[in-house]
Length: 382
Image (tube, rainbow, N blue to C red; front, top):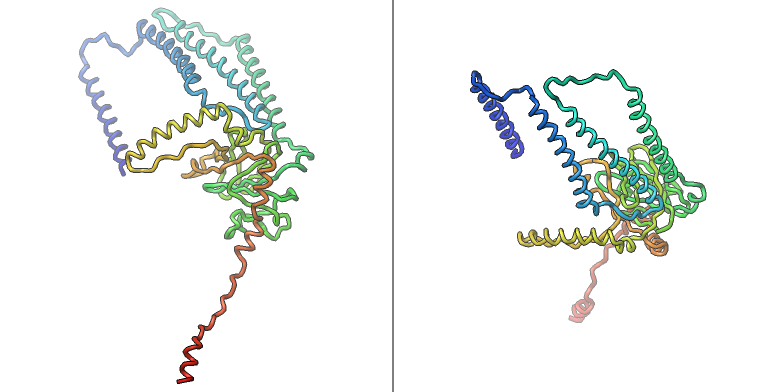
């Protein structure tokens, strides 16, 4: 209701300003004034210099942005293919930066150079084959090079040969509003069949427990990956379109209801090692300074202080999937192979969990109350 009232007030203020403007224009009828709605040489010169000022603002703001926010980039990639993605991004952004800088200068320079002057007429060119060839062929060559390099990089990322498949870990990422679950395939490297119609109780992924391949599947809510090991992700969605986004691994793939999508990568940096990365340490310090400052305000208002932030890899949703989209995330831990093996071996299979959850409860037998034999003997003697 408050928002509606604020909107209504703003609309009424706008209407009032509009009406006042009309009244002011009516009061000027019949008066002599040097003002005119037709631009003269002075107006054109002012606009020309303003164009130069605006392009200067663009350059200054660009330089400031690079200085102020360059520390917000992700930094060290944590997967084998990450360096290829970063190289492609660096090339694309460098080209965009220089082309934008050059074309923006030309745009604003010509707006000043060829500004309107009294008595000057514009010269009309029907066409110029040389110019059209230049501004068509050069972008075509540059874009074709970028696209071909991008496709080559993408194909290398997505291609998984048979040897890698035999040694890879197969994990299903299951998306739903608003959370993630993961299912690990067992030694058979095969995930059991699943269907949303089979969702019941603890079987929140709808796994077909009658499928032999599902007997060794393990379902978890925290994702662990072994460093240096190929991981093949099979992705499903229960409800709407989600997007599995793992920024530090430079990985993203849509999760589409009714179908299975796939992405694979090899982690190269453990969580413990990434926490010692210089860029990550600086980011954590910066975040904790902000949290300390905010905690002081919260404590002053009677609340509890915020916990210190510790870096963790995260699985996020990169599609706006609903009201709690911002909170749809799952922690990812990259372990050493030995730590991962120990962690996974401690997890029960879904079949075991289902059996325990649905096991018949033991029947409690009624126990006859104990008889005090001393009272009985006493009664007989009496």
